[in-house]
Structure formats: C-alpha cells, structure tokens
Length: 137
Image 1 (cartoon, one colour):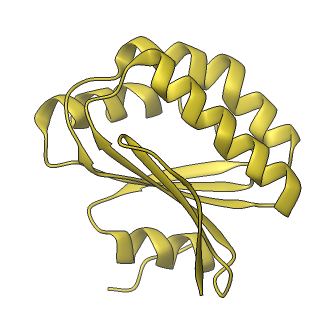
Image 2 (tube, rainbow, N blue to C red):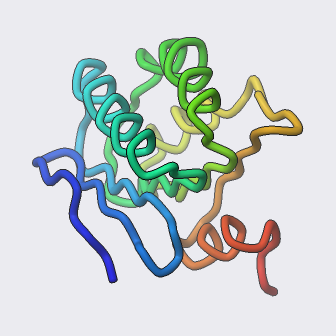
C-alpha cells in the first residue's frame, strides 16, 4: 500500500508501507528553493516514520540542479543520516543535464558504515538494492 505524503507540481513524496521505502518522484525543472523545501519535507516525514530507505526517482526531472548540491551534501544529508537514513537509491533521468547534476551530487561519495547510496537506470533495480543491498541480474 502506497500513501501519498506530499503532492506538488515538482515533487511527489509517497511511502510504500509494505516495502518501508520513502519514495520521492522529482518532476520537471527544479529550483534550489524547491529542492530545499522538498528535502526538508522528506526529512520531516523520515523523522516521524523512522524511515531508513529513500528512493529519489529523478526519471521525470529535467535540467540541472547543481546549485543545490553543496547544500544537499553538506547540510541536508548529515541531518538525514543523524535521523536514521541508511540507504538512498537514485534513479537517473534520461535528461543529460539532470544526469550530469546527479553525477556531480554523488561525486564526493559520502558513504560510511552508517550510510551509503547508489544510482540506477530503473526503479526496479533501485528498489532491489534498497531492500537487499544488491541488484538482481
């Protein structure tokens, strides 16, 4: 059962109760302010539901969001990890600028024994990895 938490023009946040995954579907072009507001909404829900797995589906995202990457990595991510986030899966957008922005976001490779993330071409592979730590061939 999937519950919609937040539905906006640029972002839909839902919660898969069966798989215990917070799912964020980013849509269209994003502003830094919109990304920050969306990330704060993600964090607020993660706190209340003791959420450990996050799926950031960027398949419908367009354009770059590199202006928000430092904020995500240096301000938001440490808060999310301290609140219990363990694993984040990203799904690539077919948009070349969005792919570049995601690769730039992931470049610092901020993994640890408490947190890791990975990027995938499909939602199915991302969910498999979130739930098992590996992807079925």
